[in-house]
Structure formats: structure tokens, C-alpha cells
Length: 222
Image 1 (cartoon, rainbow, N blue to C red):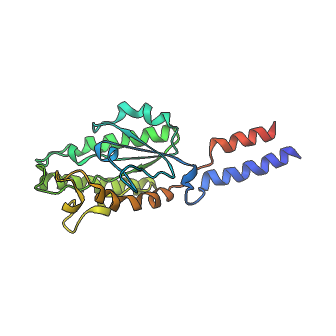
Image 2: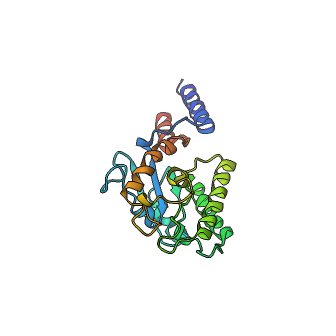
Image 3: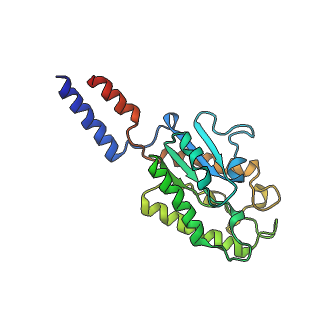
């Protein structure tokens, strides 16, 4: 009788694993945000909080190539990893090596999948041309890169954390009211624009059955 029960439970788990369980219950998920200064300064809903009702963590690396902090990401045993590149890595002369930037993003996604985490790539925030030395050529590279990020997510069936779209003005720039004067880093008003989109995006991720479920099955069998 126990064997029949085990088989029935495993079949149910198998269905959940292969077809997805719909919107994620993020209260039971570990999420890592991998980025640089913009990620580090992200506070929401208040200046001294970062989604306090959830098990969210930040891993910070101030280089475009973030492979050096992969062990820090893995140490959290995350269910989801969302990651982005900063507008500061884009050349003001418009000579950004976009292929290299795409490669860095791919490396992160590959690592996520190797540790069983779902990748949620993010677009790069816009800049405000004319502030802090930011240029139109730099913004053009960001826009081209973000087009690739969205297409890449769509090709792989991933959610996209589309920061750019949520905050860009009609000219595709970071609005003056939403940065601290350097045309690059959001102020708290800027984070208040981005924050409400984060949870709905992550809830769109389909998580597979957890190791804890399989542990319960093994215990039942014993």
C-alpha cells in the first residue's frame, strides 16, 4: 500500500516539476539580486528596507564580469537570481563591446542553471544625457543591449526584470527627478518607481518542486 502511495505522490511531484506550478509563492523562495552600485543602493519600500517580507539578498560586484562572486551567489542556495549590468560600463563614445557584455550575462545565466536557480535577467537602467558625462552614444549602446536582453529572455522563456522600460521617459532617458544628479544612479524616488514592479515580475517565475518535497517523499518511503 505504501508503495502505491509513494508512486502517486511522485507522479504528482513529477507533474509539478515538468509543467510548473504557476505564479511563485515568493514567501518560500530565496532570491539573489546580483549587480553593482545601483543594486547595492536599492531600497524599497523605505530608505532603510529591501522588500522586508521576503528572503531577498544582494551580491555586489563592481565589474561587468561578475564571475568572481559566483560562490557568494551559490552560498545562498537561491531559487531565483536576477542580475544586471550598469550603465557605467557602457562607453561614452559609443564603442561598448556589446558582445562581451552579452557574454558576461550569459555566464551568469549558465551559472544560475548549474546551481538549480532560475535566471531573471534585467535590463540596464537608462542614463540622463548631459549629466555626469553621460552621452547619447552611451545611451544608444544601452538601448541596443536592452533589446538583446529582452529577446534573450523571450528565447529562453525567462522573465525579464525590465528596469529600463519602467523608468525611462519619452526620450528613453532617466528622468532628472529620479536620479541624484549624476544622471546614472536612481534616488529614492527612482527606486519608488522601480520597486512596485519587482514582486509581480518574480511571481511570474515558475519554480519546480523543491528538494524539501523529495526529502519528504523519501521519509515517507522509509
